[in-house]
Image (cartoon, rainbow, N blue to C red; front, side, top):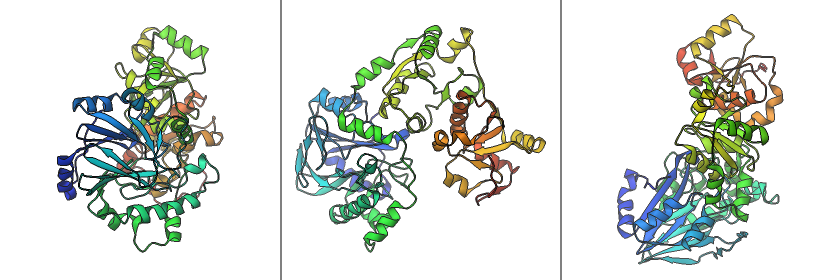
Length: 495
């Protein structure tokens, strides 16, 4: 992870320049998680908001400016990643801060609503904003003169959206999404909307995160723009309208979310321990022995096209260069699952780190030399057949009984799909495996080929041998002009 400051959007570039003359504010955005952490520095003191699991980059950033990290501020108990608050506090002496009602299983400062923290010449005001979760808190940054400059909104307010109000009920059953949505309505209107329009909004997530429904690809904005364009901040919106709109269309969250929440509440192994456990180079014989003697999953993180041409039998493919961590979380139900890694040489630590970000701490080694070493050792290999859209059309013409299976989200399939195709979203493969017939041959596609290879590799590992991947996915199918495309759900049963 590198600490890079997100480029300011032109419409409030002047505001951003003013901020950075007064203090340093850096957004550390991690694309694969669509997550924004923040580094703020003033007069030799710094705070980090919502840090990722690996903390050395934050420490190095502070050392570069000869600054001391005074606080680690948490906007809430995160569900989509494991925060680095414990490691960062232990290594720097920084105090961990949560908002009101938080009950962590470790030492932390539980701030009261309205409490003011001092950082150098700046102040940070604690604004308790329950709704996404009950402890959700925003942090309002002001200069030495008391001028409000920026607000760090966590999962309370996103750009174009607000936090989903159904995640906390996975941990506390009494917190229904209706109750949480009403809390969120009140928080937005009493704590955030009264603030000045020129305040810069820094949320915890952007487009692609499962913590909201329809976030913008932009990762910062002014509060004034959000009051004008964010559906959830309409001034004339009633509470009932808000509840209906914010809860409409919510899909089940990834299965690993409650597990990450509990790790963030109760604590976890230090990242150094996790890295040491996973960073074990195993030669092909030792790797094979570990696979046979443990219940470890073989996780191959190479590109889908490379994987298809040859892989270790029973390995599953989740490419490191895609939405890696969220798909690991969706497809491997148990975060305590032992994992053996096959990846490109030089990327082993990256894979272990990115697994740890979402709580998969039990990597027990990697194949030294990668798949090439496995082949050179004369070990057994497997393949998944891949065909182009043109080849797919030809095969369907020769054998109309072939089944086309679309593994995109239901909403994607509904929007546009090949007439006659079935739909089992990758997210639900574990739940709907019984619908797939081992005696049928499936032509499997997603949007581009990334998800379909995950799908096919999992089926292969479970004994479903008659799967064929469509390279390039729906995009190439549509562009080929060889298929009838519909934007209506096909009534026939395809499976």
